[in-house]
Each structure stands twice: as structure tokens, then as C-alpha cells.
Image (cartoon, rainbow, N blue to C red; front, side, top):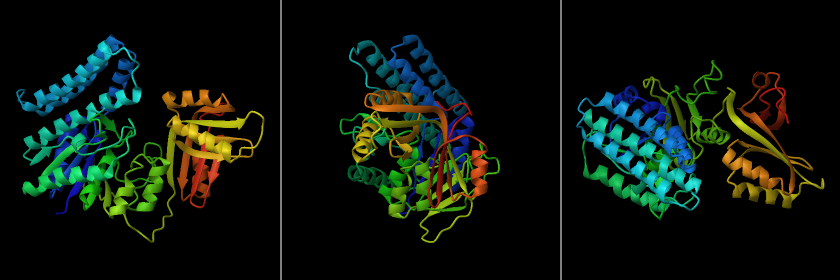
Length: 439
């Protein structure tokens, strides 16, 4: 049984027109059996994060406003998709919203103990995927597809590291084999579809967990690996994997083929088209990854495959904005030694801060990290207790794979370089956003 996996992100399902387009792609390209993994619609995750922030602040007026915006967005899409207002999808989506509202009311009105942000994040923000999957499932059935919806929390088992849960691969594989492969085995219909949610899972305590922001790609890779799928296709709003973000570099080109190793490198350095955790399960099982455009699905896209001999001459640009450069030094100006680095990395792990690039000298250690105030602000306050700590806000991290002088000059373009790291194939530079940005 050759199973394929399709993953559709929020941009693909951000409107009624988007849902109709996805249905058209599924009906055209599905040869069955097919697993579909879907993200929350459009900017729903951002909207739910705002609702979460209002909830954490216990601001009832703001909660009602944020909740209503999310409700209105989804029901306007439902109204466009289904002329029959008695269709069961309306009741199913309303039930999900009622569960979300009930959870918020319970926590807001009856909880006196401090709320844990990471835990509450997973319980609230996960509703975006649950609602999106419900709508897409019912529309595919409406269009005549043989589609069954599965709750991914019954399939992907994780630990309790909320907002960045680790997968229990053995249990997850057993659950997916039993439920999804069993479904295809028992329902031998042409082009049968199993549809589920990306981004989320469930811990042993039956609490909802999430796999990290943009984790739906990883979810799709989990299903592909567990089912030993033939291919995984990730549908994006770009023609494939580009050598740069076309919104930033207008003459960016699509890379027709990538090796697993190059794709892993690009994901690691922050290429937004592929989630960093996605590639390794596919490589281990030799599953072809295709990145295709839902805007023009007839384009060939990019194929990521096992290539032992592979060379590329086109520089690949990766840009990470909203970064912070942090530099620490011992207060007595002693050397940065192994014990200092060990202590610093322990602190970083405790605050769950991921290092995007690092560099050390005799008396200082510098890191560039995502400027997440919930993590970085307490990290800096803690570091200041024992280290001389300086930081630059509003910086950008640029990575060039397969760089040359022309590519470097194009990227830097006269801006102040705050940090530079170079290897055989990769150049990383931290650039000040403005000439006067250095603190």
C-alpha cells in the first residue's frame, strides 16, 4: 500500500476561495490513499495568541473582543462555503468554539493560582488546527471526496514539554499504524483520504501539546515516517524552495532539486519554507519530499531526495529578522573557559533560548537569538547577576549558503557588521538594522 501525505499550511486555507482551491488540488492530484495534514487558517494562530495574552492578563473585555474576531473569521468562511445553514459543519465548529470559551471561562473565573503560559498556550492555540480541519473535512466530503477526519491527539503522543513537545516515536508509530493504516486497509475506496491536524499532539496526561511554531510540517513528516509513505508534498505559496525569499529578493529562483543534507542545513539556518525538524525522518526512511505551489499546482516545484553527489553554484540567502545579539564577559575580565561556556549553555537551556549563531573570544561570548521577550528578557536579567552583559536589539541575521563575493556585497550593502562567522560553504553575519543601532 503506497500512501502519500499532503500538508497544507495556513496560507492555503485562509479563505473560502483557499479552501475551494485546496479541494481542487486534492481532487486532481490524489491517487489515494492520502493523508492530509492541515494548519490553522490564515493568521488564526496569531489571533489565538492574542486571545491567550488577554486570558493571561484576565482582561474580560479584551477576551470577548479577541474571541469574537476569531469566531467571525471562521463563520464568514463557513457562510461562503455552505449555502445550507443546517449543515452539520456549523454545529461541529460551534461546539469547538464553545469548548474554547468554556476553557477560558473556567480558567478566568475560578483559577486563583498563577497560570503557566506554555501550558495554557497549548490548550488554547491548538483550537486553530481543530477548527480548520473540521471545516476542510466537511468541504471535501461536500465535494464528493471519501474523507474521514482523525483527531491527531489520538495519534501523536508526546512528552509534556509544552510549546515544544518531544515525540514518543514508538507509541506514535503504533497509534498511527493501527488507526490510519488500519483505516485504509478497511476502507478500500478509490482515493481514500484521512485528514488530521498539524502542529499538535497529546501527552500521557491527555493534555494537548504543540510541536513548536510552524510545526505542521513536522507533523506531516511524522505521519510520512510512521506510515513509510512514498512521498510527502508540502504545498506553499511559492513555486518551491527558493534561493531567497522572493518578498525580499525579487529575482529569487526556484531550486529544482535539493539533497536531504542541503535541505537540513537550510532548515537549520532558518529557511522558512521547511521546518527544521521535518527533513530527518524523511531522510531516514528515504521518503521523497516535494515542495509545490498551491497557487500554481502544475509547476514542478522542488524535490528533496537522497543525492550522494550533489553540487550547487547558486548562493542561497536566508534572512532572520527580529533578532537580538547578546554578549557576556566575566566581571573580572578573566578568560572565557570551558566552565564558563558550560554554565552559560546550562542557563540558555533553562530559559529555553535557542542559539542561532555564536562566537567567542578570550574574554567574551556572543550569541544571536530570536528576540522573544518572554524568554530573552528574563535570560538577560539572570545573566547580569554574574556576567557583564551587553545586547543589541533590532538586528538581523543573514546566512549565505555557497557564498561568493558578489552575494556577500549584495547582502551587506554598506551596513555595519556586528558579528561574522564563516566556514567552507556558509557565511553568517549579524547586521545592525540602522547605522546607529549599536548599543
